[in-house]
Image (cartoon, rainbow, N blue to C red; front, side):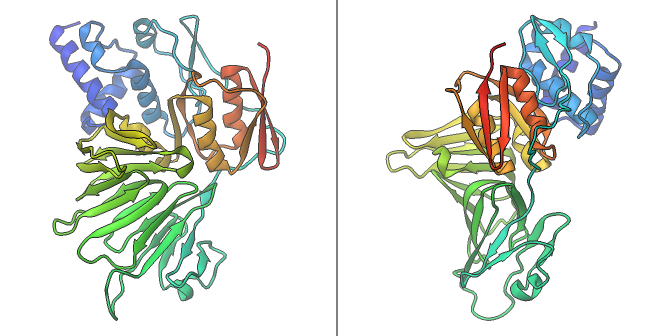
Length: 383
């Protein structure tokens, strides 16, 4: 292979993986993959992660299709380690040799449907209004527009009366719920399950919101007014950008991951004065007793849930099941002590029934799940 092409290809693969490739470069990578052409095999290959790259290529080509993919020999030849089982059922490695993981087809008794667009609007006077299509008086009660097909509510700024920015309301999602809030300034916030956002009916000299749970932000640029998010242990300041904030109280930590633009993140902990400027691909983490630090994040993972996918990348069993618990509104009950060293990776649609996801987890660690109403019992079985 020509050395110049090898170097150029490595650069394009890296850009494809982190989400900065042009449309032409994206098409080029997909063509290489489909035509089974070799990728760089010398030192340049260290600039990208082949497991994640393969994963992203399959995701881009197949989108929401969870069908079996033919293995490409270029990847098999270049990876020697045993890789994680991918939850979408696309592939797994056993004994350093590729095998195909079966797609889950056996529904468990008492199966559970995935979450959907549902939320509650809490008005300034304390009244709660469910954002459902069945609520025929929604427009009359709130004066707001709701697009149920897209799962969005549009907060319309007050046109008259005293505007102080001190009239607050909130929108909250239950377990198995998600909803998008279009704020008075046009910024979009997509709430994940069991989350709440608190905001003024109209922004004045600054745009400040409070979040508990998880949300993906698309902030409308405004040079004259900062956009500030208070979430758990962090305060996040932004002008115009895309980022994800995760701050569930039960997890005792706050994670802010930047997808595009720039962010300033500072700790709210009393004994922590750390403050960082984030660039795309950076992730700020802190929590109870843990000072604010910055790590590298996977942009595709941060986008995944709001695009309708679970994206696991080295998560242990408890972390995976915590995510499933919120989305399917179930409680997992262990009959054993789960290992913190278990590791799961993969992508699967959030629109799948619970049994589909659980069967794939069963294959990974010899587990058996039994759904009993709102509880899912987990047993460890001998191989």
